Image (cartoon, rainbow, N blue to C red; front, side):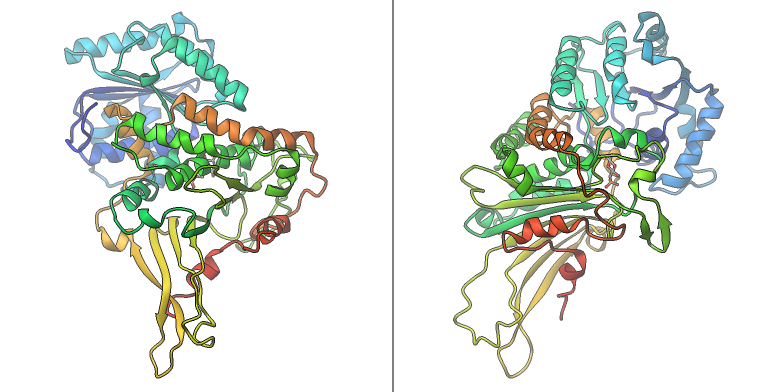
Length: 511
Ligand code: BG6
């Protein structure tokens, strides 16, 4: 494994399947461009976009430049780094969906030519940014290329969704295992590349303050919210096969939950961290049918208004069935049956067209005895709360009680805030920058191992099956711009708690 602190990592060849697609345009090439501009890519690197679209290298570069102009963290500048970066971009027109050796020999030829040109064997990254149906056939095609087997310098990065359910994930894992070593396989979950998500480990394990109280003695419950203000946009066809539980909870949210709930790793070794995360997933309670009705809620957005614009109901979106049973919102109460988390609910929710864009983790601490204070003093008392906001803000807020200035003992909740952007002036890398650099350097810590993906599927499968077999009679059941269906509030209210939304998270500031 190379150390990414040392800039200019080893010569690298990157082949992006789905090169003419949206993800490459919006995320992958802008990320690679920023890595280049930050000096991480060696002078010897080449990026080949692979697709069926008929592009010349020049057309491809122009197409990607549009992506840089719209989506790059570092703005495009005339006579800036783009000019030299683009010389490393190439396009290969081919139908990778055949998986045939004769088609993949084009790639093999490029590898051989480059080895000759550079006089050495480079790192090779195959990035699968294609429809999941194509993963197996492309993986087989890659395996026809000489030297891709058991070669630690040759890695294959697979986008989500990894499988449609447990069975298909197991099947895909088995196929990949026959073709490559597990160490060569990088299953990406872009949430794990977000700075604030990575900071959870530092926050928990590099400070003496929090870990001793990070358990069921002090924590009442945890809430994880990933709310979006967009609908399904142009992705109706994909979303119909997915839904909020598969699209966000099975992967992103469960991964964040693992970071919050895992035991301390003894080292930062990739397998050690992943072992600790798998332990959490395996300890999550698997619900029976009755429990699913009680602890899992689904929703689908109706037509309405979103930020002053009229929006369609999900069932009216392009490529969506008018009777669709697909959920665009899901909320689940998870229980982790281990010593640390016994009886501490983890409430998670995610939805499209929600009130605001917000990804947040809330650690709600238990009430403390208030008897020593006069009852008037404690009127606005609120139990301690830690709020980790992943986006749009990047901050951590600790809420505690303070005495209000004056001659009487009156208490008020206040906040102590750590804001990333105010504290660290250097720009934050995008999640895809971090993860691509890790993959280039051979660091798989923030990527999912085969058993991790399968354990996450095991957690959600009973809910998915129950929802699939039980047509939702009340869809659509929430308005755009709301916090989801009423059932979601009712689910948490049964436990005497409520969802903590931004408006009441931040309102306490100095009030
Ligand atoms: C993707 C989902 O994995 O994550 C999308 O497929 C979702 O539906 C996106 O919009 C959210 O990512 P982010 O980084 O914008 O929160």
